[in-house]
Image 1 (cartoon, rainbow, N blue to C red):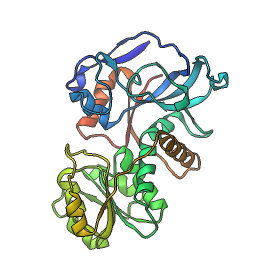
Image 2 (cartoon, rainbow, N blue to C red):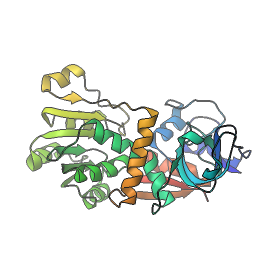
Image 3 (spheres, rainbow, N blue to C red):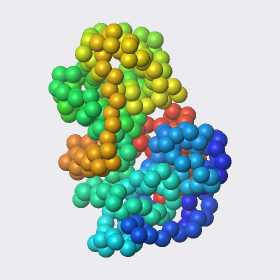
Length: 318
């Protein structure tokens, strides 16, 4: 089969397409014919340095999320899964490939009416956005700031916050990304590269009740200063390259809670299902901004690293 190999850490061009042995479904596993592979920003960071949540055992096939059709199952797995459309995490490797063998217990069936590419776009980002909204206890009337609002998670947070009855302030880098956030229903959409963006937030909504910090660094710290007493801040990404690094003492002095979500594997599966069901109901729609064929995974990583992407980036495998 075709796959994308990572044999050394470095720039995107270290991702090289080539042949790989066909996987076989072992005990407790299912074999998936992959239609789409998910790409996350964390994977681009891992590819560059080896740092992150995955095991750095080179050579390896990168990729932690796929969607496709089950073509075979191993021992102790229900044969009725064969032919089912599913999405699943892979355990940290193997996703950038035409076929992958995974733990059958981790499969999530895709609801009727939801396209496979939509389901893969929601696999990581949908469960994350759902988890974050739940963790901060988002409620109607909250004034919510979503950073990186045109990214994979950010575009979903804008939609979920709107659905919860919150007033949504979306910030992103560049006019094109700001317009995407506005089209998704943000009440206020601003470019955080403009020096007066925090002043404009205060003019529009006063203070904030919730900050979803997906950028970190100076942007995250500036967003923290906009929170009123009783506010909640949840940092979920560091697109700037660094965390906002707000101390518990600084938060306490301002009467702000720093929320740190924690979920079990079962809870994460439940969040994935919730996001897929919302897509089936037409209330959650991921923005798939760009697609790349499997052999061009390096180009996909380069685009994400350059911050030129909108919403979700997928590899089209079939």
